[in-house]
Length: 277
Image (cartoon, rainbow, N blue to C red; front, side, top):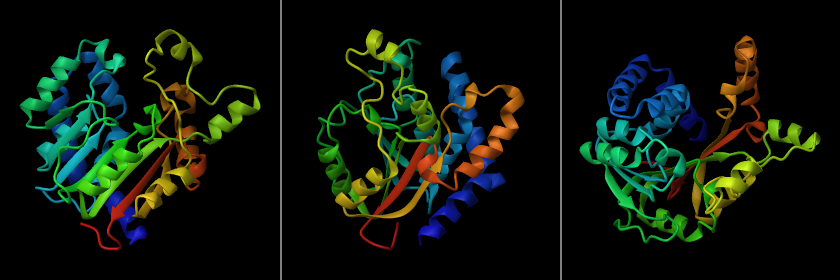
């Protein structure tokens, strides 16, 4: 089943009809976003499509998605437009987005598209959802920002997941090949200390990035069967000189054969054994 999961995701990513449909909905939705946010999300379109494909694994309209920390991202809106029932948990206090004065606008966009919003700190909330009621839970590049253990949150997530439901977890990789090389030259593998020093109260940056084996432990501790683990290289692509764009693209694609060296890690766990919903 694990190899089938990867094949199904790749099927969605390569499906021209699926991509076209998603891209059209995406373009319609980001029209309402401020210009700077539109540019940022358009530049990250491949990661966006990949995340959509992860969620769409065994996709069917009417399934319920719970997203942790998605905030202003447009992909929950796209999934709502595709027929899913989407709920977002976020405190909407991200200063980066607030610089654009966009939080109120983004909240309005979500509510206009009938996305359910649970506003608050995910680590402090008791999820107001019925047990065994959710088909998909996503947590994309969020847990590295947590100041405390997500143990209670993840236990709640497992409670609300239906048998056969997915928990899709992705994070930056603390020991990617780039970070290993930087460490050899006495450069930190943490985000900028300047950001931490000047804007870190409270710190909204990365607190603790995991490695692949730790994500697999998280799934095991919560009795979730891992059906997919892989690496992607989303971070830093925009920094490559244009002349190196294609060589780096092929090199990064090759690097994905070795997930522990990639910049981003994705793990999917299913509740309740081999069968998935």
